[in-house]
Length: 533
Image (cartoon, rainbow, N blue to C red; front, side, top):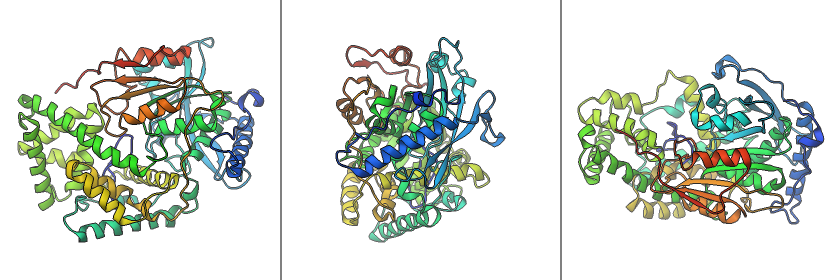
């Protein structure tokens, strides 16, 4: 399950998801840091040297900022450009790929400017190019930070406007209805396993040349090259969801290059969790947050008429699921499409009311609202291409970052056991990740995330009941990063906390970004406002 805004996606999957020219080159390029897990690791040394070479080159070249292409849908004064990076950092003079970047200048004075703030929204596979739009859209939560920082977004390697990858024809990818992710028989499991294997083969066929290099450490190296191209001596970084893991890996590989770092909704960086176990942990957390949403729907029965208890709302859900399994709604919305749509509620509180409204209309006899919300739009070729690309990158990065179990017995045992008490997401998530069991490219050992020389205090923000990135991940990262501070949003579970209005959290994020100061101790905050029906 990817940990950023879910898109409708699926292939093998039942699940959805289913972010200034250089002044002094010397200033922009710090010495290579090869300390990350590199004791005696010559590969890592070579990649550190390769990054330093690529960064020096990028600092010299800068970025040729232009008005953004019309089809990027980024209004002036946002500017766009490209940064060139090596496909393989061990071969910095070998094949190069392009990364799309954009920026908007700080809104304050020259004296107030503190450099660039680079953003990643998660995924893996999320585009960060919308980040500068927080300024053009006058997003109040980010107004203080925008005075001090240029807001810089980028598409990571493989994503969108950068050199992209693909695993399957996008129109095929979104076709519906998919098979119900919850298997009724061994034959169902066999069919899903075949789809997962074919998906992995499709990735190799369409994008095999990039697959071995689609790793989080390489994206972290890319981030360092972007930093240099911007003319920045040190990195200011905001990472949400998977972006927190990217930040953690960057901080491990380049501890002396970090100036300020905010990580929000944290992927557990433990090597034991990346990525197989992390996905199993999600299934448990999703079930908990799904129940939180049902409790809220029940509390607002006067609006939604879906039942006055969680059990009643769950019964309506199971009834809807059974109906869609027997006869897909509108011919296109089966259980897989329902999960794709409904999972946005456990992800984001902002989806609570819209999801409940669609469900309520369906129960009252309006099936069209559900079809409009949950079925793919085959005419939206650009959106479908983006969904397919996002899924391809998600799969490629998670499969390449770590060794996955290759034995089907392991997957079957773990997911069968989990499904018993956590049925909402378990099997859908399993099929989405199963291509990693037969992945055709080399799988790495995850970076050992830790504090290196020069790493400043990092600000960690996390809601207690987050489904996509369970709370333990924030605790684990906090333990590993000396001098970090953890802000916990208690009794809350929305994924991505820093963009919500919370008077306990927003000023602390501002204060850290503007002054570098952290609280003397960890902080627990009351939750943001509960959604209104």
